[in-house]
Image (tube, rainbow, N blue to C red; front, side):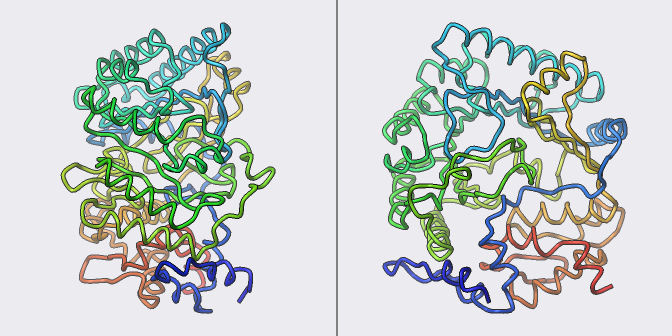
Length: 479
């Protein structure tokens, strides 16, 4: 086995328990999984198609069909403007000084373009105008940079042209720009959920990430949001940052409990190129850390898993993890939009409008252009700024549905699966069957009747499981 991989796994903090998953990853027969987590690919909410050069008109037809059948959809609106670029960011952004005179014209144009693209979506997929939106998510970028007039114009358009009768509205901002006045504006506009990136409550780590806010600002934003009337406040934390210790993560967990946050997203820092992967927003370029490296040493795999298990221990009494790395209080529901996308009884269509947006239905997906000049040119020519489409073969549809369901960390039920796929069992799908046999042998899952359930090691390694065990090539080896 590669000594570099084992050295990383052996990078442990002696003051904390050896991670539960250590012995599993150290075993030679599990080298593939160890190599995967060491290479550090992007997260498990990536479920790509397998048919390239898919016709755009077919994508539109299938999206129209699925939207008509779905109880709800998930709708995104991306505002790509930022006042700076974080050192770990790979997403397409427009860096702008929001205080400068030219910024007003840029904000106006960005909102114009988002509305124009939305109108093109409505023309190409007419069912969108009537589909019940389950959750509307304004994200970016930093949408909290938008001036009040532009934000009001954007939201008025969506409320007038889409079915928001049952929608919850979620806003992803940046703590230094989510002032009390801005939070009051969001509440007035109908938003009930606020989300923002903290990354860490350690100011040294925040500064190392290139962020322009402090931990104190984050706490003030949380207090202001509660005072304004938001009871759904979600913060994003990252573990595996350069220079970060297990003690630092412990401090973050204690701060989360002290603040009694309703929702916390704890994701591992991923340094692989998003350009080669798929997310809610496609990657465009390498991050600063990828280009130049980080000044401090990244914690090895051993410490990363100590951090992961520490998070689990701190949240186990008061929170539920659903889906992976999304923690919500027992007294409040999970992230609605994630359930709309991943829960086996849903997995409804999602439409992401904006630079780099990723939209999908059960049979195909489309990825928007990530280069702003080309994105703008497409809109000027009166066409949707879609870069490419991928289709899903019948076999891949079943595989993706199973993988998405597995990422929820809930048991995956075959009866529920058969209801969705015309009586076909996932046990008879050659890709899923082969993966389940391997995972059962490795004690990463248990199979009881119709239910497939992740073991504790399976929960920890669910990303690696999803992205290494369910491939056509592995299935062909055994059939």
